[in-house]
Length: 429
Image (tube, rainbow, N blue to C red; front, top):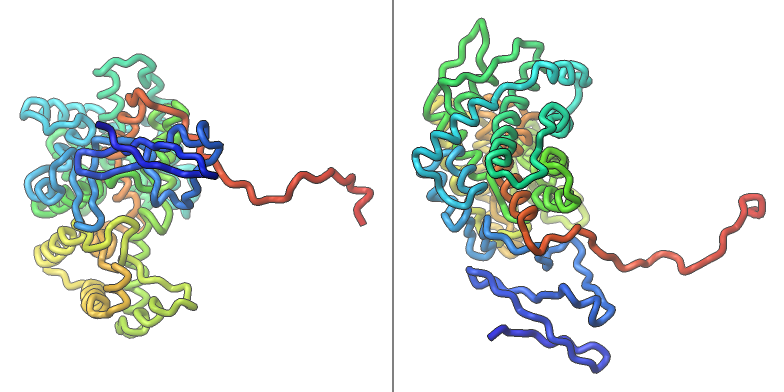
């Protein structure tokens, strides 16, 4: 029997259906609220509003749980590859060996960039941010590959998804090389998805890049941890723009633009900049902790707390271990990691941080990890975007296939002036 909630307005009772998910999450279905009552709900930031039903990712912020298609992210980080995880997110199930091999072949076949696109890169201003470039270039892919399916043909759709997954990686490495004035390195059919990216980024005629499988595995884990995260800002942007039935490239471009923000994908860069600031000012985190606790000070500690997680971010725990492993492998000591550890140790003993659920999140350690790999600071958010791409694609696909699809069109409560007459400019004193 379907359960309901009762809403009493001006003495009149309305019944709202209660929807329950597979993990016990419950929601009030207010789809007909305005039609039946003339009222809307007001929820700034949508913290209490569900925009869809989804079978892709499950999060429990109170318990620190994250699962892709039901599989804990910890298991995927330990046993899976980024390619396999991308396939899981997009298709709903882990691939067979044959399916994964076919997917890998398609990633290889679609990895090259049309030569005419190079001129686009070369005409961006040198100071252009890589995220702005990437968003523009992804949108531009539509012009070079206009055969985005208008018909529901599975093979064509899979090619479109795979093309994006493969080419975004190549575009990112290409933009980095061109920004340095270096020769662009083409993808190699002999290398895996992650190894190919590292090689395209760092190989050089004067210093050939040696593939290190431990670093390749570390990059796999980094991208797996970023692959999807439910209805966050950028994913919601992909779904919202996609609800207008725009092409996939335009929807993904919107997601990249949303991810660019310092409170979303740009947070990993902001963490490193904060740690560098602490280091440059003597390395003592105590004054910065005091500033973060001061309500009159706009300063905030980047990398602590999360909109959903009220305990440890499960991805952060994995990233911390991976970061330490990579630094040990490279025999590299990063003073910013030492500051990060001191900052974490002090903050987690402070009642203010405990009471406000301000635990280290994924971004707190991912920036140091990217530094260790040699990724430049302005490319940090691009690395996030590559990892999040399978999630964006799967969310776009799910929304397009949703029989309850509707054009996203939020309402508002108007608080401006009441009706008033127009005054001609010559009558104004």
